[in-house]
Length: 484
Ligand code: GLN
Image (cartoon, rainbow, N blue to C red; front, side):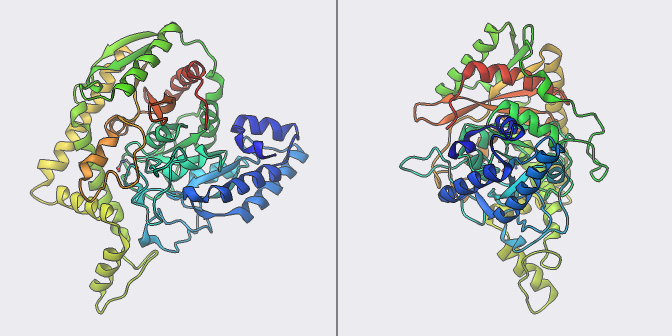
């Protein structure tokens, strides 16, 4: 029975449908694995009792023949999603004991599809970070760690560690600048950041609203297709949610990719690029070629401005979004003599150092006198970055790049306090995609000489996740990556 946890979502659905095992048995197997995997610090809240109740109901649905698309599938939920009646803190001290009165649209969609929730997953505080080290609940640990503890990536590091170590069948993540793709790459799993607007942001704690998107983190490409179909859809409660039909992504898997034009952006291949990453990148291109795809060189000339642009726009939106945590309305409150002291005490104690840094940078770039020089300038560059992609997609159907410039590093190795830029460099291949609002998938391509996973990224046109899934599935078949 312990092998149940190794099944992908699609395999588990088959087993459940044919009654080889029950949803309760499947859920119990995952609960046992969660207990064994506590050393990874992937879950910050475990909701096992509720999960067993949900699983029981799922078994009834199977008996009655009313089973839905994800009936009885045990999932983990990133702690950025509000879950009704279940503590949600975005892994920040300032949201201590916050229990939402409502369910985010994405998690509600998953529940409506019959899934079972095992708990809330660790992450960087308010999704700011690339290693899960900024979490108030201490870092999650990469299951690939050997003698030294490695980061699982971030900000959705708990989600990646949980999927990697079979502590859930799949998980939700969010991605503002790479937070689904980079941890997926570090933990040898698959993750897709869909087109901006594909998934509703309603009920997801806001970091940078013009960049935030939810997406699935899964054991393989098929699971990502199944999960995204269930998570996505128009939601009138989010004014930026797209009123566009969600295709059946699974349908395209296995389709021929002959003639597909795959772009390789020359600006991504700097002299300093890690040799192993570069060689896997060539290998992936070669695999596509062997399947009859055409490899074309493209140019994304404003790439070098993507990180500075992102690290102006994201903090600007943060400083506005996080103004609501004042000690009055939610979570932590530290009283003072005057009302002002209450605000100051709460925000001083409640926010971690990285969150404070971003609030200050954001406040600075939005302040009178600097607004034009920084914020407006960054918005203009953002447009140029978007136009780069539009031009590139006249020449190709998909863009292939590495997901991250390196594999997982040791906990404590890239201290944000000493030099945050070192940490920000994690996002060099991922942030442009968010600035342009495009969809992108990361899937494992192989292990480096340290035995650690590396990921490849496939970037598509807006609302064309189907082409990404089709090509991703083909690459996955050729790579035949052995899941941990
Ligand atoms: N690492 C990036 C940041 O710290 C991206 C985080 C994210 O996508 N949420 O902003």
